[in-house]
Length: 153
Image (cartoon, rainbow, N blue to C red; front, side, top):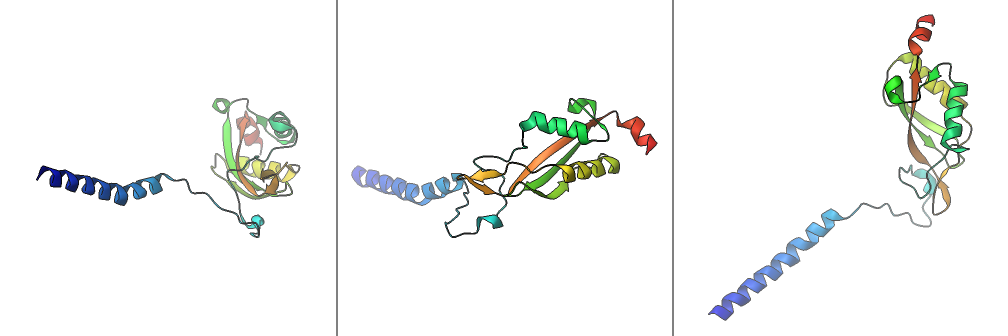
């Protein structure tokens, strides 16, 4: 009798594992976008890539570009100013499209960000498997000392 009960318990445990373990492991899997060789890769906009897009010359040159191009002073940190967050798409050729402002501290600053982005040079595009792809990036520009200049506008 004990042998039968033990065998029944083992069978129950085995059935339980076979039924619920695949569901648990499936829930833990990452979703990965599979790109087939004949797929037109340009129809996708990526967020995570092997090599992210970069401003030519790096972040320091980008900060200099903002400082040189902006009509307003650029803050050294977020605590000292008004930050505008925006996202844009860096295309395979490094051009910028799809600019979206993510917050709105003031209409003047939003217009200033739009103006600055239009003046940006081509970026170094993001890559997957060493092929340029379209990538959505999030950026910020933090303006300082705008109160006096805003009153002049």
